[in-house]
Image (cartoon, rainbow, N blue to C red; front, side, top):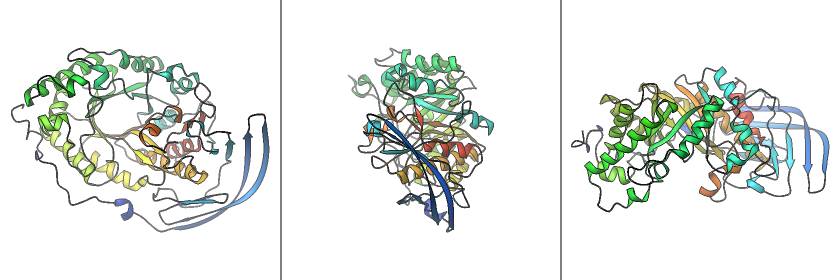
Length: 458
């Protein structure tokens, strides 16, 4: 296999070529006009530095939805979204909206925050997901870290009604687990496994082979890697991690983000040295070390809707399977932007294409960030629709086993440090900062509606 590594994957060693991107979001648009008039009681809680004032007002709100681009009207603010969502037409009744006003934009909080209506004790996203037949609804968590000292954060993370699965955001990655060649550190990964096992939560282990967060010894070797020596290094890393954690991992993201957005292979240390066959070699090593119950996934972003990158990912999976190598699932990361989330129909069509290859599908890193801060009230309402669209696609796809949020709390989100001026991508926030109780935003309701068979916003 090593001597044939440049062609063993069954794909050309040169980058894959595609005619161009395909935008199916435009293709599946339908035009429908719905006008609704509802009477809404709105409770406004205004928090200032010195006191709290509560007032109740009643107003009539008229919302008009035209075509596949919902126009969400809240008060006098209107925004137009580029996404469409199943269930976005028909008569709806608005739920009460609680607006919290704070004196600062701490943690990217908006001036006015729409809060969730589903706050009943004993309810939770994982409980709702399991009731639909899914294996879990879970979250990533960057522990060990300051989150562990945050009582408000840990109270939600430990709640198995909310989260039945955990994913380590960082501490199973290469730079942490093999900081020096053939010297392995399992301490950080053990932390989240211990938390999950104590709570009865399964763990998606993440990840084995990626182009990023690699240790210095790997990216700057004393002697340049050859095809054979780098394959040996990669196989050794995979074998040690998969064997060590064994069945403590429900699944592994074996290879992460191997493709460019146009469907060509990403030029990185693995591809440049080994060639495209590094993917098949990685999965073969993982399959050899992993018990049959541990699921092996290819994981990537921008493969959540039909297009050249999704097609290339499907070709990778098909080729690996054709070689008799085990690959069990496709992880669709699903990092979206408010108003630009693919429609439910588009995501379902794409999931079906992966499922046709005989693999499971999972939404593995879901968040929906605001492109501007603070988000407007209308953007927050659209975020509810966008979370609904993605989760509903999983609910309606038998092969989709579950949904993972890429952390659930804005306080510890990766988004602001990665996308300057953006954020507010998670269903919870801590309005009073770290160490204080987490509060569910209206985005939470969008997830609940998708899991419980409701039309979004009802």
